[in-house]
Image (cartoon, rainbow, N blue to C red; front, side, top):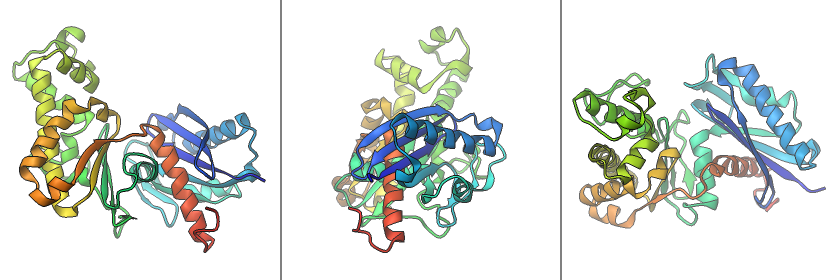
Length: 331
């Protein structure tokens, strides 16, 4: 009987699910609204519904599922299968996701942080393939990150290694939900860049974007800033440049500390491409240690939204093999 692997990427807006064979060829994928405001039991039911729809659509019985991996945002204990806290999910504290899934599935379920499963995806199948030392940044609502050194994903004592977004860049900067202030992610993210743009408008600067939003600053998006950049709007160019420079300083620190082969930039904001990365690379070249900086490539992620489901499936597959005590058994 042919076996399959499920990968789930839980986001605040959408749940993405992927069905793969054991060679990690995609059999099918779907995306459905999370509706996080309705609470943890509802969200977990949405995940199970997504699994049911995906398997039924492709004629796969649950008995054929070898394992399932899940990428969960926030703090968690992957060994326990426990999601400790997720900031964008109301009432989401100490949710034992694996135990909840065991009530419905006989196959093993594994969880990890959503950024780390994206890292697994890019490492094995995307922009990180072939590199032993790498860092992945996901730039979206915030700044997430994961680290691989000598072919090992770093987890740390509390499974929270790699919080590059919480490096302090300003002594008295913007407040952060972590309790500190001036964190990198408060500036280098879609929300952070928009806030920088709004601050400059508040200082009396002007932009073509104001005509697009009829003066409603709450309607400004990171995509608009990219589009205005292409029209050579001076404020958009300035903000994109400042954001890239700040990210470059952050990455210079990361490169000096970790000495990676490659830094991969993913997430929705990565679509800005060289508009952002040009300033990033220039700053890294100027401020990172020459040997380490000269050997490190800064590239865009390749898999887009598929990195999460594919990475979650890969993560589960490898965990299942190790659990069985024979990592090569199912290759």
